[in-house]
Length: 117
Length: 117
Image (cartoon, rainbow over all chains, first blue to last red; front, side, top):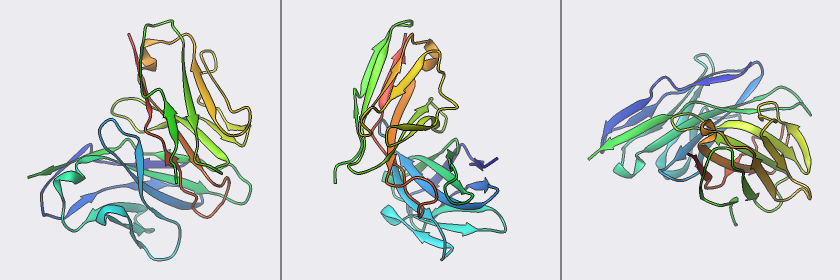
């Protein structure tokens, strides 16, 4: 069964410093990987996704994520954090197992990111 | 492009009462999802529609929850009777493809926030 883990409930980073939000996954087939962000009282906003190709994926708001197959990880990164990046971040995985098969997207429990001014 | 529309945004009801949430997906999106997000947790899939057919409702508490998408466009999620543990955000989402479409992305609405007292 597919699963996704976000090992940190909360990450604190000083403004201007680089940030990393960790995500590891487990699938039986090939993974499609996603990052979403949720601001207070809002729905989830799509940030970026990995399908195939370059292991480094660039997304919205200056975020990027690195796919590492050997470590089954898909960590979210940003070179210089902003206070406005403070939010709840969700990693998600879709297990693609073949044509016309039901594929589900599974979300991690979320990591709260605090950027300190 | 208009996003996923949901209403109402906020609802407070007493236990044992009923409530209904409405969702209109992004135009042309064939797949519609209802997720439940309890505070401090990631979204959990309740039901997935492909056009007007149910693809997955394995985690829908069918004794009290029901959902329909009669014309394959908008959808309604109903809870009757509500319990205290149903207090959560109900997120509607949609995607343009089903199955092994190329990394089709799920787009979320702003959510319907339910408090059961």
